[in-house]
Image (cartoon, rainbow over all chains, first blue to last red; front, side, top):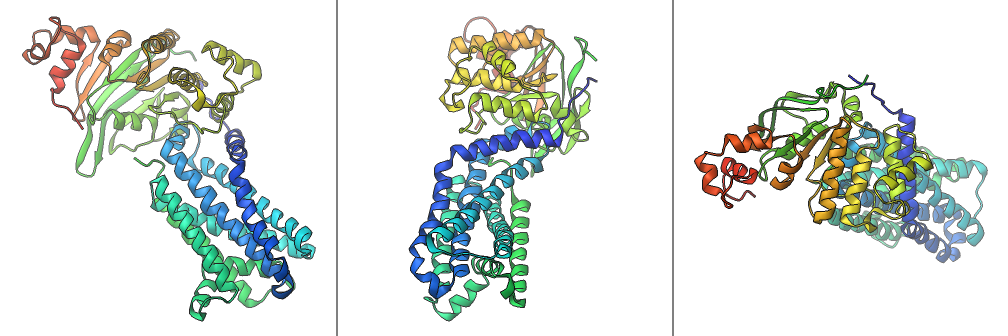
Length: 250
Length: 260
């Protein structure tokens, strides 16, 4: 038996992260698009800030950004790489499967951070929305919780659907469904029944915990329940995604 | 500890793989020695890919045991894979990454330090010194195969799996790849090669196993297989050139019908 070198988890993660961040950087057009949509909405809603409140507008835009990160970015990248056999090529190396996914998720956490920061900065400069320090910190924390819901949903979609084109179509559909129904319901433009469904949907709960997180003084028991429901969504979607996920489409 | 030239780098014992009621691999046993090119030949659906996937640790066998460089692929998968270099059939690298970045990635996940000088040396060895900053997809088929092979070898593995490596290559690139395989054999690496090219198997393999319907039906050196089946009526009946070739033996043993 020869001396066998098993690379440390740190070395493996470092190599994977460098490759995954480079890949994300090379796909910066899609990063810009993910960032652009919430910022355009933010700027176009400038006139509504006084009426709806800064946290309402910011939370809506961040929710849309988080949707795009989890549904358009993460799931499509995983579906493509699985179809091309990129995961299988990595899995024949001496590394654990979780390290491949941890690296992918770290890139998405960076994207969540970028989207949230982008919205906060644009909100400040474009709409003059300023939160307290605690509001920003809790806002970021809620963005990560909310982001986990959409990453989990993205994972569930690639877990249940193998074909990358179908994954692309389904994620677009869910994305636009969430944005359109979610935004109109939040603005009170839809029937009451639909509005109450949306409030407890993955769109509504994420938006509400973000909004409540940005004003920690106004955090209520209802906000805590919404946070619990949001965490529940993240756990259920992730469990489905992990349970049915296959590393290959064959 | 250095491997002796006869050390077994891959041992497959009584491998069984089933998909539902379909038995894809049925009691397959063989070994690959250091300094040997071992060909695994078979028609489509014969069980080659399933066998290879088990060796790679991508597929769990129902029963049987596989060791790579003495490490059980089930019990010590990371150790087994650390001794394994793999070139898969299709290109499997992120299209956004350059050749240098892909090499850095695979060196990193194998725990191999890769300096700029070493990277240049590697690229020079495959005559791609100017391709460091090219995306993998921008390379020709032959160049891609050369890059895939050096990536498979970046950690100097004891066993190299080459899954139909010359498919789609022009004769020059194919010859070049054969020479590289022979170079690896001379450096005491064991190579497990799958191919549909009997010419290739005859040209480079020291031993071959013919697998059909999940079972190994013949295993020996190409010349011994030809000699042993020279007078087999099934082989003679499919012979086309007046002399018996490895392809005649292969078709004689596995039948003439086209597999899906």
